Length: 100
Image (cartoon, rainbow, N blue to C red; front, side):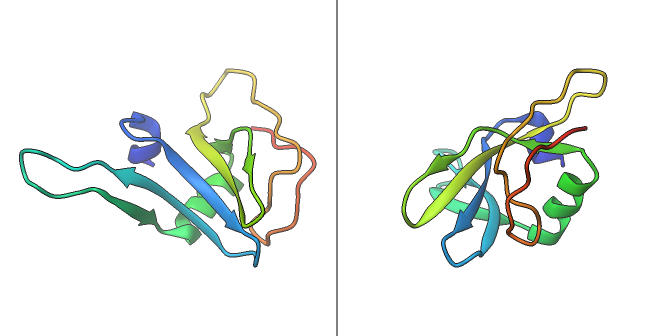
């Protein structure tokens, strides 16, 4: 949750055409350590649980033939929640709307 809340790096959910779901972010190359420059996956079950609990929400999708990518952001308590049409549920089926 800290990675998503701090927003130092953009976290995305990628839903592949075969239904496979993966949350992750791009870790840039660090000149200090010489490490990075790779995609880092986050635990799908834990991220799905955060989504189901209304602690994170999905932004507008970017769709291509092989996959759909959603930006992931924290839900700000007390603020109106964004509604995302067609966002996938944990089972991979589209949802009509997401609310906090």
